[in-house]
Amino acid sequence: MCNKACCFTGHRIIPEREYKTISKHLEREIVGLIHKDVRYFGAGGALGFDTLAALSVLKLKGVYPWIKLILVLPHKEQAKGWSEGDIKIYSQILQEADKAVYMSEQYQNGCMHKRNRYLVDHSDICLCYLTKTSGGTAYTVDYAKQKGLQIINIALD
Image (cartoon, rainbow, N blue to C red; front, side):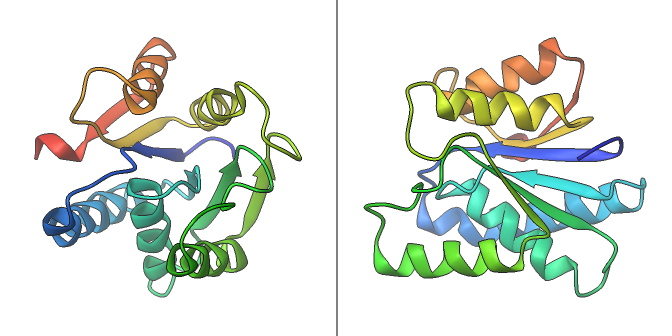
């Protein structure tokens, strides 16, 4: 990823009733960023918001074929223990992504934070779904603020 890049961060657990609304907000914000010449979109490959964001980018590639989805994954066994349905969606995203970057071969202590910092360090904008003041998403958004990224929190829409 390079200039004109956006990373995603958000909660893994999202109330099912909010999926459709969040997806609409995501698509609207992504299209707005594309019109501001953002070309690269980085997602962490986790369940929940990361999955919604990656699927939104892949959907929009049909209209904007020049945009790129870059998966930044903590390790190669990330989907271990997931449900069959979640693994199927993850595999589809991984197959359709333009690039996948792995922080390590196997799970290691700190690999999730390393992934989150990598996403922020290679972005100009952080598009997030943040509703809590603690946890991995809050840490990542705080790190993005420290690094001077523009923060767009669709949970506040």
